Image (cartoon, rainbow, N blue to C red; front, side, top):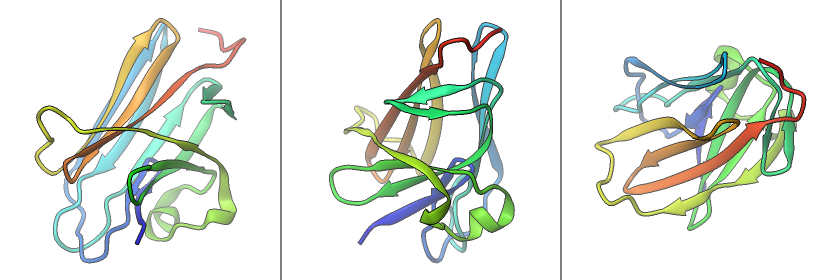
Length: 154
């Protein structure tokens, strides 16, 4: 069965989990800061996150205009996918609606050398105009690279 990681980085809508303290991951490219806010799953609710970009981005060919989004990690089997949704807010965190997806991109799967304790999200700069979103959960790590779209100014 496929798990949905949910919120605007909507991460794991796992049944039976509760909200934990909000975490923030961000990356700065020039004067632009891209931010992910998420909650780690605990025992009675869903893990949620939000994604904000002040510039147009591209995720493996999927163009994403600047703005606020919900990103769902579709975690199932050996290949996870990142679903980017135009839905935001509490309703988006509570329920994944694939009809609101802007698109989906495959994530690169790895087995971390040191698995994260629980659930973690990071955003890491990989060049002047590119970064990657990493999700670590249940002994797996999935990454989705992205870059500033052409013309994204500082």
